[in-house]
Amino acid sequence: SEVDQEIMEGMARGIQGLLSENWSALTEAFVDIGFVTSPIMHRANLDDVWRVDPEFDLPRLAEELEQAMKATSGGMSRFGALATVINKEISPTWLVFTPPYVLLLIRTFLTLEGMAAS
Image 1 (cartoon, rainbow, N blue to C red):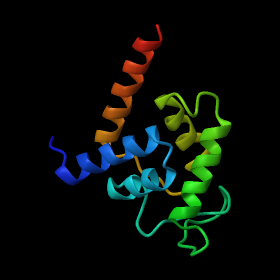
Image 2: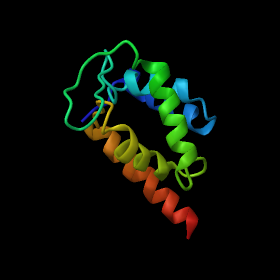
Image 3: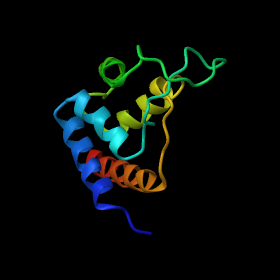
């Protein structure tokens, strides 16, 4: 399969945002690559329904992402921590999709990270 140029550029911006701890740039890249819906959907808890809420916008997502990354072991130094944060901290209340090409890239980065650590 083929990935659009815009998606590849969005992935590159996301990686730059992650490495520079620019959470706003990272969340904007999430929208650009289809990882986060546009408009952004949020729910208060697992029993709630997904909805658009003006109080839960991109800056709020960036803020929650930053807090979760800083609170997670290795969150500021390991790419794998991002996958943990998205799965355990962000996705329960923010509607997040994982396109197939993202799964392949995450697997690649996690493999490289594991090889570098050993």
